[in-house]
Image 1 (cartoon, helix red, strand yellow):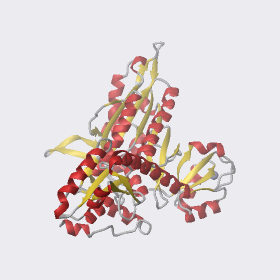
Image 2 (tube, rainbow, N blue to C red; image 1 turned 90 degrees about the horizontal axis):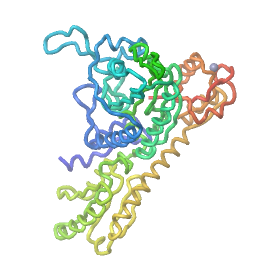
Image 3 (cartoon, protein in one colour; image 1 turned 135 degrees about the horizontal axis):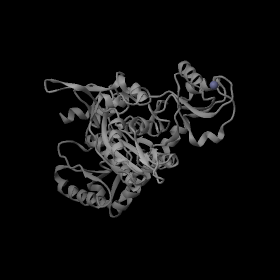
Image 4 (tube, rainbow, N blue to C red; image 1 turned 45 degrees about the vertical axis):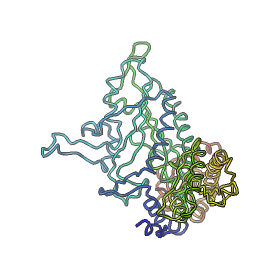
Length: 483
Ligand SMILES: [Zn+2]
C-alpha cells in the first residue's frame, strides 16, 4: 500500500491550476482531512502543530500584556444573540442552531457561537463594578461555527474554524485605541517571524468593518493567484456593546460611566496563506519556526551495512536534536528515494542524508526544502550547521514571500490603469478613494475588486482624486479580488 502511495505525486502544478493544487497538496501531505460534516475539516497532527505554535507564541505575548484566558459556553441563547441589532443582522444567515436536548424540544433555541461577544458581555456587565476592575482583558482560544453556503475550501472557507477571541474592556477611549498597535504588533510578529508571511496593516472601510463595531483594522495577505486574504484583525467597538449590555462602572469621581471595548482575533485561516505562499509543485514548504519536524535524517544503507549507517545516523540525529526538532527515518520497508519524496511532500525544511561513503568522508548531505539545494556539511559540525541552515531557510522564505507580494502590488491614479493593473499584475492596487460607499460598490461591481484595507503606512502618500468619481480623495486604499 505504501509503495502505491509513493507513486502518487501531486497531480496539479501550482502555477497552472492553483486552487486544485492547493486542495490536492494539503490532503496528500496528510495535513488536513475532510470529515463527514460537509465544510468541516480535521486538523491532523502536522497542521495542528502549526496552530499550536501560533497559539503558544500569541498566548505568551498576550499574557505579557495583561491578557487572561477564559472559557465561555459554546452555546448562546437566541435572545442574547439578538441584543445587538447589527451584530445579529450580520451573523443570522450563518448561525447553526441547537433546538433539541435528546428528544425534547428546547424552549429557546441555542446558537452555536459564531463569535462570543453576546454571551461574554452579559457576564462582563456583572463583573465590572468600578474603575478598579478595569481594564479587563479577556481572551479565549476556541472554535466557532459559521454555516457557509459557498464551496468550502480548507482553512479559507470552512464552517468551523479555530481562533482566539480577545475581548478588552477599558475605562477610556484613549486606552482602548492604544491597544490597537500592541495587538496588531503581536500578530504581525507571529506572521512575519514564524509563518514567514509579509503583512499589510490597515483600516477596513465602513462597509467591511466588524458588525457592531466602530472601526476595524486588518492584516491582509496575498495568495499566489493574486487574490487577497484577510488575516488577523482588531476592532474598536466603542461603546456599542457596552450600551446594549449595560457594561457600566463607577469612575474615580464616583459617577456612573459606560465602558469602552475592543475585540481581536487570529484564526486558522492564516495557515491557508502559509500553504499557498510557500508551497510548490513537490508539496508543502513549512517555515522552520513552524514545522513539527524541522530536520529529518534519512540513512541510506543496504542490508550488509545497515547497522553501521543507522548507528552513525543516530549520532547525527541526537546531535541535531539538541537544538532542533529532529526525526530519524529508519523505516526498512521503503526506499530512501520514497522517503525523500514523502518528506518533501510534507514540507520538512531540512533533510540530512547519510550513507556509508559519507561516513567515510566525515560528512553528510543537507538538502533544503525551500530551494532544493544540496550541500555537504561536516559530521562534526552537523548540529551547528543545521541550525544555521534552518535560520537561513526561515529568512529566505520570508524574503521570497516579500518579493512575491511586491511583484503583485501597484499604484494607480486613474480607473483605466487600475483596471489594467488588476488584469495584468493582479494582487493589490493602491489608489486614492473619496470614502463613499457608492464608489466602493461600483468599483467592486465593475472589477470584482474590493477594498481590502487602507494601509496605515500609505496614508501619507495621499494624493490625486478618487479613482472612480474624481472628487477629492480621503484615503489611499488597497483594492484586490479577495477570498
Ligand atoms: Zn469617489
